[in-house]
Each structure stands twice: as structure tokens, then as C-alpha cells.
Image (cartoon, rainbow over all chains, first blue to last red; front, side, top):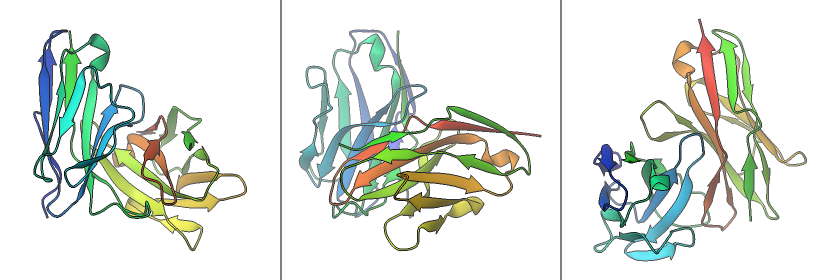
Length: 116
Length: 113
């Protein structure tokens, strides 16, 4: 079974530029998560999708971050414009379905973003 | 809302020695508890999880954890560590019927030869 795929693995941009990250979850997984992991910290949830609908985006900085999962499969996370404090690893995870919280999340390798 | 504390940011230990990584949580409802490991430049991998039943949970790579409801703890243990266990370890909590995972800040385990 293929795991969660993410691209690119690394990205370096200048502040005020735009950047997009792509995630393809495990086949059949209805729930998809985007996390931001700043160096030395645990992952912080940015947005959660159930199929193509948003379940939770309360911690997404909506003035600059956006995410979509149009067909309920792969997803794109965009930052526009980027700030220095956006430097982090962006992790995508998926789980089979959203039930009572028992579901295991499977993580991709992450995209490491450096904003100069 | 739930929260997770990992008091030890770094734990150095010699190879073949035992190790315990501490995790405490706070929540007003029952929770599910998880330990993840993150190797350098990789994503998170599930080590073990507590959902219900026996409070002693065994995971991969010889790790185990014990859920203590009265102390709101879920400490991770391994009786004998290897160099390959060097990694970052994250404790996470999810409320029963909740949707959000909350991760602790992580503990960096360094196994020394």
C-alpha cells in the first residue's frame, strides 16, 4: 500500500512570494489533514477535510493560507504572500474516515519550507 | 480543550539502557492517546495508541506505554534502546468523539554508543 505522498520535499522562497504544496493521501482515505510543524515544536493542525468538505480550519491563517481538496482525493495548500514565520515543515496526513477519534493518521514525509 | 505536556525536551541515554519519555495531558472528557516517532527529515510514524481496555499498550520497535487516568499520564518506555531509536518522539491526544489531534512539543531521544 502506497503511503501519503507530498511534493515538493523542499522549497526556498523569498518573503512575499507565493508557494503551493501538494498532497496525495492513501487510497480510500476520506479524511485529510494539513499540519504546520515549526522547528522544535509539535505539529499544529491547519485544516482538516472530510472528502472534499472542510471539517475544521479554525487555526488556518486565512488571510494568507488557503487549501482545497476539490475532488475529495488530493489536496493543495497555498501560502500567498509568505512571511518569514511561515518557515516550517508542512505535513499532510490521512485517515480512513472520521469517526469517534479512534482513527490512526498516516503522515507523509513533509515539505520543508524556508522563507528568506 | 485538550493539551499535552512533554516535560523533557531532550533525553540522552546510553545504548542498551532503559528509557522513559514522559507525557501528561489535560482534558475534561475521555481521550485517546498516541505516541509518534519522527526520524530526521521524515514524517511521523505511529508507535502505539491507547483507545480502551488494557492500560499497558505495546507498540512497534519494542516500545510500550502505560495509560494512567488518575495521573493523566501516558509515559513511553523501552527496556533497552538502540542507536537507531535516536529520533523525536511526540505524544498526541484526541478527545473521544473529538476531531482534533493535539500534539505535545516533542522529546528528542539521543542514544549514545
